[in-house]
Length: 155
Image 1 (tube, helix red, strand yellow):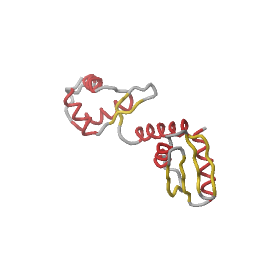
Image 2: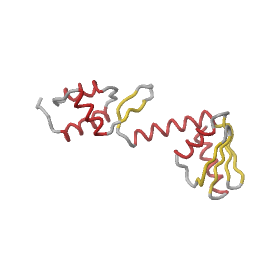
Image 3: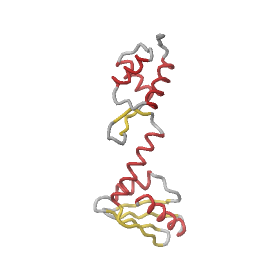
Image 4: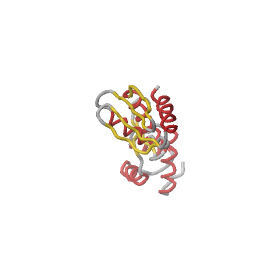
């Protein structure tokens, strides 16, 4: 194997490796790079991780692995917020251009944050109490569409 020292080449290899393989530790990543002919130490890999701004996300087995910030992280966050809504929402109904979401006690704040983060269309504002979320929509039609969409998410 030819020795590789170029930082840009190494960074590209790291991105490829974490995209193709579930890498859980710096040690694993160091081993993969050494196998590919890079002359690295764990300290070098640690600096590379910081420079690339890699994050750790949980996979379906609740193991953590390195990922690039962005799409994969967004998918993980969206999945978590969807799970919050699925577990906490009891009822959804609209009244004119308002939507009222009833949740299990203590869950309204989390549901409101999930609704805001999931970026539903035409939401004007969200207010949460202990077990109730009020969502202001642009129109009655938008409220009906939101109720249908949120109902799909939580079912």
